Length: 161
Image 1 (tube, rainbow, N blue to C red):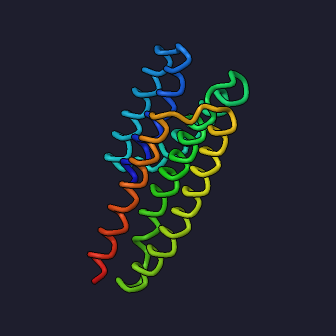
Image 2 (cartoon, helix red, strand yellow):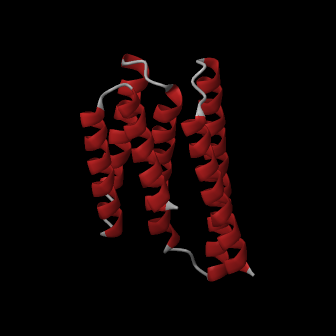
Image 3 (cartoon, one colour):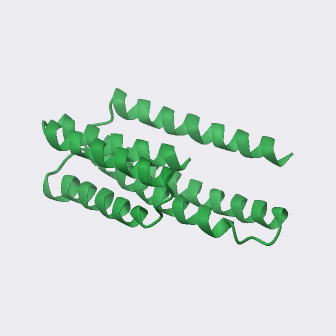
């Protein structure tokens, strides 16, 4: 889920910038996201702070100052927040006393972060609809996020029992 959050966040921001003609900046967003994936693989937890700052600033620049499509900017910010949260959750999870305690903490955490992400994507979809920018690409992103979420839920239930 961490890898998917980083990838979807970066692709969403890059797509939003590319749609308005800033393809060079979109390429740099993809490069940064690839570096964040490398940092996550190398377990450089400190880089999650750099990543969330970059995602938020990039989304804020596009949304408030340049008036880009809100859905792509919200999606980038939401996925950046999820990636930051999951990075530190994996670290904190190691300190659970037992496997049962770890599973309960994991379940509660994933429920909360999933609810937050769902609310964020609903608000972003509402914003896209209000600006009459709800299009096929946005629907495809929603389908992708839904499919990844369902796969995560199924994987969690299978591991549980």
